[in-house]
Length: 59
Image (cartoon, rainbow, N blue to C red; front, top):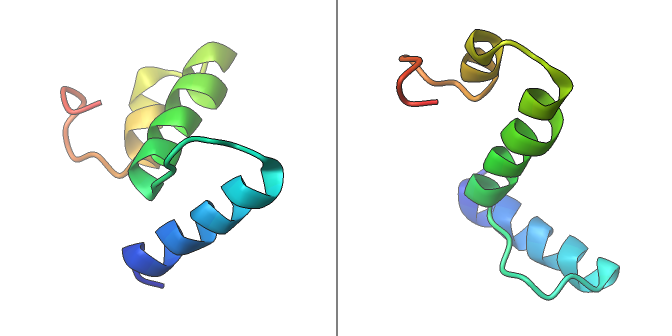
């Protein structure tokens, strides 16, 4: 699946859910990292791997 198609699906979901923000995969990825992983005491190294970062400093 392409980024463009995924972003299109996210826009559809936002419309159905009544979310009035521009959603992209990039935003979704950061929301996942912040809301789910880091707030749940998941180690930063694990979050880095889940996000596909090659360096911990990127995370």
